[in-house]
Image (cartoon, rainbow, N blue to C red; front, side, top):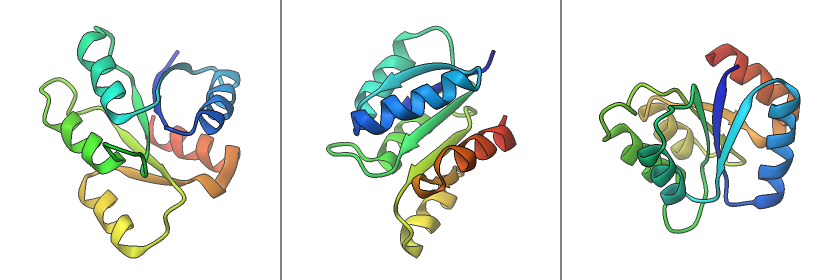
Length: 120
């Protein structure tokens, strides 16, 4: 069973997404902040097969979190999909420059599961 780390500061969105992923037979770990995700990744021996990372979060946003993940040996190769409601060109270029996929929150469950399947 594939393991996904879900990082989102919106607890309602996180619970909904976690339900979708669990029903699709993924094992899910969650973090409500970028720092929480880093703490989990650094202390947990098991590495997720994919990180679903919210783009806009307080304190440490998605791009900052991804840069910190990529700076850590052993974490660099984990695929990352940004989940975002942002559609502006600068945000899209930034996400692509960080070598991360993008899935819009507006795509809902079908779009999310299709994006995950294409990465895994």
